[in-house]
Length: 112
Image (cartoon, rainbow, N blue to C red; front, side, top):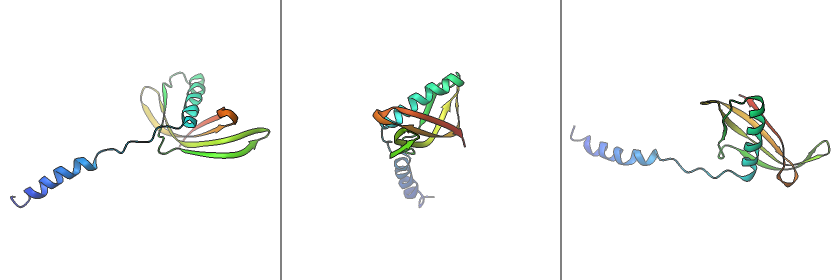
């Protein structure tokens, strides 16, 4: 047992440092816009939704130069979202299209 003491001491000092979380980056303005408009649309159909949680580190914000018919699309945001309905449930995938001047054109959520 005495031979294990240095190892246990070393493990006790190293393991807490390994468990620390790396701070995530702040959400982008595009991500915040998609979250806000998406939450408003979800609440119209499902008033029990209290919040939408989106991991900014897992989301993709891609610049675009395309159109849907005659409407310009400048940014596409994709990622995972969690809808709070009293408790956090399974993740949803979401896609958000942003047009000119940062206007959200569409936020679409689907269960995985």
